[in-house]
Length: 468
Image 1 (cartoon, rainbow, N blue to C red):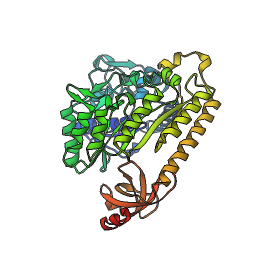
Image 2 (cartoon, helix red, strand yellow):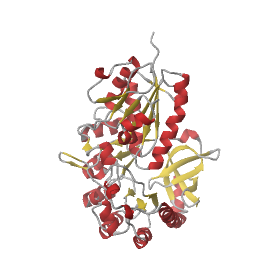
Image 3 (tube, rainbow, N blue to C red):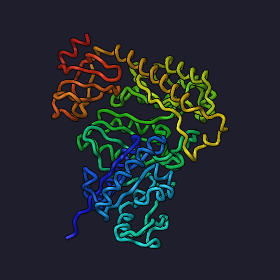
Image 4 (tube, rainbow, N blue to C red):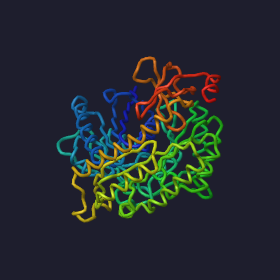
């Protein structure tokens, strides 16, 4: 009797990558694979990667080199690198890491089981689908060719395939793949292709299935999620429909583009009880000249108008953002404009980055003299982080004493405590039992470290008294 093959998927990067990891696991499980919890227990190891920043790629290369040791012990082990980094580096990755059997980009996952069958059977180059390129590996190999799957499929949105969800608390629901924007710093359009939107009825059926399984929070995912359109369905219409699925108690979405934050969308956010009072709105810079060089297609003033529109409709809105410093050509005064934007908007949270050059992006063609010395960019990043954390600490200190509904996600660091999130995406640790994971508790926020809160569970009666 043939032993069941076991697969292990290890994911790095953004929420879309996490969702892709669940997708690959679901595809393999549907074809009879068992999903392993450790690489040591697997017959197939897939390292699912991100290409947004150079540091992430170096980390993955180091991890893949570590996993090479398992192949030494078990020559039949299949080691693959998938995702955005695999798409970006392509055959070059296959040459740099000849012990890797498979290099597969984000549009190849539907064919993953067939490709693994070919590798296991030692299939010849001409036996694999035309979309597969082969690269000869040095030395002798038991299984046959090393394979790269790098074609971008303009129609592939993985409709009809089910993810193997790893959380019993909340679910990622990809509604869109790829991106039609061409921000000069971003590699995504070149590794994930153009925007491809899923059928809304299939999305709603998936969300209904998630709710039927007992999960009450979903996050809609897309590279510019609010640009979603499918026939007569806008993102606002889809968000409204998802929020009304029976059993769904919380809906979030990420990451939107400021240009597509419409009055219609904000109205749905304000009107639908299930839509959380949280918005992630990437600003990237607080200077118009830098934004133009980034090809963001909005100005600081128009960004501020979007913020005002959202806060006017949702007064309790928690707002987060992405900021890049050290973009080629950024002057110190332009960086100061970004700090001014941070102080003007006062974001609840900010994800801050130092510009990282990505081969294949338009920014690489900017004049060599425009590139910012690393020490200067690092100093700007550290100053930005100080400002962002200071604002966050001030906001959170002002929220101590609030009563919040918390969805319990997992155990906290301290024994006898659990960790969860409020509707506004604030992290709270409080005394509780692991049996509470996946359920809601009413909590009063008692203190903050600046970024997270400590709390105490209270009853509904106590909540009324605290709230006055």
